[in-house]
Image (cartoon, rainbow, N blue to C red; front, side, top):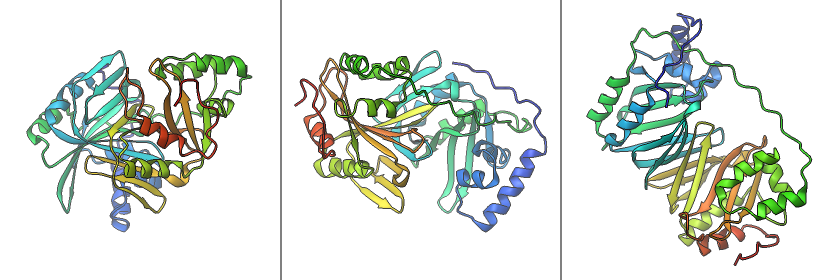
Length: 365
């Protein structure tokens, strides 16, 4: 893990004050506007907006990730938030110690379960905001483009002394120059490879672990949604865009414990367990439970797929949700540990979402 703070090139010393003035004006007319939406309106990144408040309740933090992760378990109960453009995943609980192999890390806990990709972690802040319920404290991490990767919020029972010690240990000088974000990377061109369907499906059938799947797609230079279309009727079934709602409602009413994955290039956050209170509010489909919240823009779902992957433990079934550009919004599995077959109740629920489930895999119930 790198503990080196990135160097900003040619920062504009007046930029921070200019953004702060513009945000203050925006808040005067729309006081409840969230930082993410405010940044979009101002034509800047969210990280630049947060950076404009340095010295006014906000501190820039050194990107000493070993020290950062070492301190998190001592904070006690917090709320971990990870999002992409279409979904927000919030999980309350306590961090377990993180483990890393190079820039790839894991936090494996019953509450907070993360897959970390540090090459996308560039800027970090400690933020304190005053509101009607008192001071709200958060740790916020952004990528090189200034897009939020992960946020951690203090709860009522968080150890504030440990929180303040983390911040004091990593705080940069108030005089640090305004950050400079990189321009948005151009979209990678979609690969329209001519795939030998028979060979592709034969290799799919030979998989023994779900973790092989992304390497399998890379070898064939094919996007997930293209792969699912290629395998339709054999290993995959297209579902309606209502499928995510039906899945969550079915899991809730049937008491089926599930796994909910939401991520971005820098982090994947996972909830494992029941979902109970499911509500639609405008375009948002929500799980509103004490320990887990999910907020998903149902109107931005373009494709939903039922996917079956063979493993040494039997077929593993997932429901995978994508936007119009083929970007992954979220993925759902039944609660399962390696070495165990998936829950029959989960498979029944997932397969029941399809009016035409397709040909079952050998060995599937």
